[in-house]
Image (tube, rainbow, N blue to C red):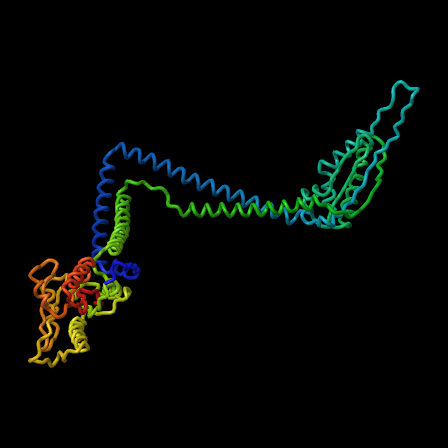
Length: 482
């Protein structure tokens, strides 16, 4: 007997089977709890709606939650519309803008200066001098160039159509009033485009000159320092990258807001809690919740009780704990039950090997197994027996009732050479001790989930003290496939 050195290993498969085996009880307990919880929830809510003050407060809470819910949806919708509009406008701009299409490492530039000159002279000997109209003329040209007239003239004559906002990005005008000069500069994707824009800018200024001569006075407009060149513009490169990154950020933000809006749409709208439909729905939810929680709690309790129990759960542990040979395992036979198919499925999932309808055959095999072992030990055949030879005395005892042992013996067949008796548990019935001490061999009869390992251990200690040999153990009431 090696029980002191034995460490029980938890068989997860057996634990799950133990939970599923009693699924009817588990279902009924969970159903009762669910019904009680549903009825309790219904009664509590019906009591609450009978209070006018409580109902008024509940209505205020509902209106506040509903308003907040709708406001959230409207806010998200407007944000999405604004982001979509901004993204579309920015996308259109990036496609049409000249600046976005210029290669910053091959930027073409064209520039020129316009100089305004008049015949104004200072005559020292005169007290009153003529008025110098140069600044007036220069300001008039500047006004013409920047107020849109010159840009419009250029747009009307360009070979490729262009919007005003894109032209203003590439054509810049700056004035130097001290020197009566105007600086024009253009940047574009190629030199021809730069020269074309600059050419039409000059033509527009020339047309304006006639009106300024008539309105202000005679003057000359001279174009100087005109040039076209190619350069590298790293600032433009950074500007273009920032613009594209802004587009990416807009798309990401739009995606995030769209996901938030979709989540908001999937969220159930706030509803009045204490309507008849809501009360009934809440009660049903309470029943479902109670049912699921009860199933889990009962399953945990069954698993915990199984793991911590000292009762005999698996016949093979008798060999591992006490070194006992398991002579036979006799299945427990249940009465007819509904949904027996589930029992059969769970039994196979639990790895059970025996069937309930094998009880008779297994009982006979148990007696034949005992006879075969005694024959190996030197006895005569148990089938024929020897009337003149003393009979071999076998005693069946264990942590089962005497009636259960007798029922087991009624299904066994023995020869005339054997004297077979069954007695009660020697630890609880002193009258059984003389029969056991006079026996040649002891056969233990234990019952699954009734016999305990501690009692079996004490029985074995008693048999050892009385110097009685235990042939093995027969376990009855074993789980089997229906």
